[in-house]
Amino acid sequence: MTCNLCGSEQQERLDLGEPLVRTGAYVQCPTCGLIYHSLPDSIDRMRDFYHSEYAGEYSASEVISRELALARINRLGKARALASLSPALEIGCANGEFIHELAGRDVEVSGVEPSRAMSEHARDHFGLEVVTGLYEDQPEKAAHYRLIAMFHVLEHVVDPTLTLQRIHRELRPGGLLFIEVPTLGDCQLSMVFKPIHPTVFVRETLEAMLAKNGFESLWIDEKGYHLQVIARPMEGQMPVTWPDPVSIRSRIKRYLATRQNVMDRIVSTLQALVGQKDGAIYGAGLNTLDLDNLFPLMQLDLEAVYDADPAKWGKQVLGLEICPPSELEAWHGSYLIISSYAFQEEILEQLAHLEKRGVRLVTLYEKS
Image (cartoon, rainbow, N blue to C red; front, side, top):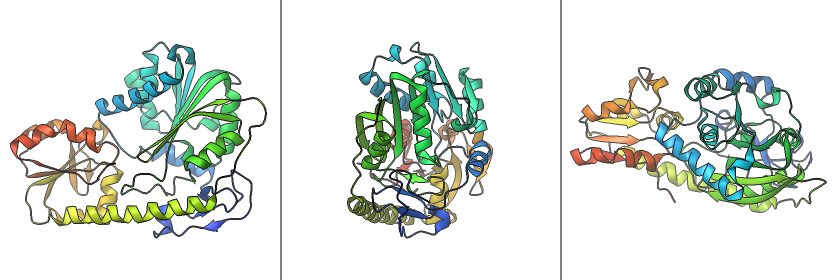
């Protein structure tokens, strides 16, 4: 497979210290430094997976989801008056929080979301115009949108170049593209290297990918493990500078070493809970499943799992019933593990009142 950024057929295998089934077969381009799968899934396999299986990597309460959407809108508002960004499209709009908030600011919005459950929520809960499916499968609308947003989507795309070229055609002159992807920043239990991430971007490769496909980056920010870019489509060919592959390879090594330290700390934290009675977990997402793979949670005396997603209530994970957070008010356990990276601080703040009655809130991550 040729490099999607520079077209080179050369590639260097990356040893990530994990089984390929957990990461996929990653390589790095020795010319431009792009990190990508040497054997990505087919577009048909990706379509089926996101339509029926994928439910996102976290579930957040409506309060937290709204705060995240508002933070993104606030950033966007600093770049352009929101009223000038109509019509707007969000690719991979999930439950629809972002475009719902945009719609409340008099922006004409629509979305496309491959997950059947998430797209139904966006339509039923918010009354949004959201199509279930992949962006690539939808009819093209040339020079139609003033804003196209995609948060944690581009890393899932099999061919980022084709996607960005289409976005370029669909944006009006002077329109904006708002992108967010995970990157080699803060480490969590779940790796950025995944079978469902055909491409992993760093700041330099994302900026080069945008320039190659006719976008000028207006604003770039890297915080935690999030990389955000606001860009605009330009006419003609943009100058492209290939990143330094050696520098990126060094970042990969630092990321893996830091992640190992994170895992060691988590194991130590959980080991200290062995023998303590009446515990529980907050969070029934992938972080909890990854946690169980790292440290079998059957070693702990756990009574229940709590999660803010109503779709999970009454189901089971790790052999425990998933309960709504409201039931924590009648729970009198000794400790509650906060099993979330993205929303650890927000959840901690929401549950702080439990500490007043002696419940220990156990966090897993030291956030920078």
